[in-house]
Image (cartoon, rainbow, N blue to C red; front, side, top):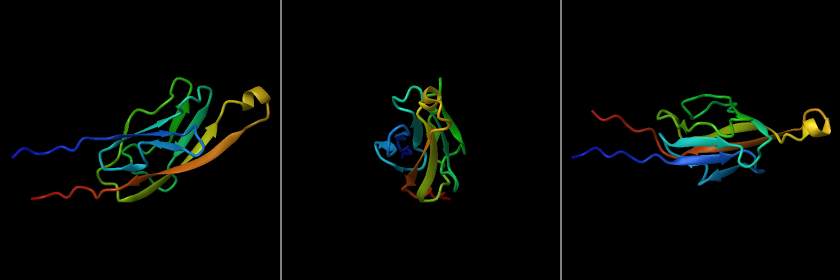
Length: 123
């Protein structure tokens, strides 16, 4: 009997929108991929952090802007517990340098919902 491998899905999180948008949804399973993107906000910068711990194998923070409009696909850890992993986004639309107003950073937040239990090891 052949071993089945589950296909990995990719969730794209656009941090340039208010609220943050998810495609297809914020629900992920172990081994899935997550990509943070600035969408069409070409002059923006953003820093994404997980203040209470992450479900991803790379802890971050992740910085977007300039030549980096999206993260490489990040993997949901096989050991991540079920639940919502909240993240914060410090978003700069790129307008403050034009207006010379100082820092005009928007704070946004979102979450990634790990929906399946870690796989059990069978003897």
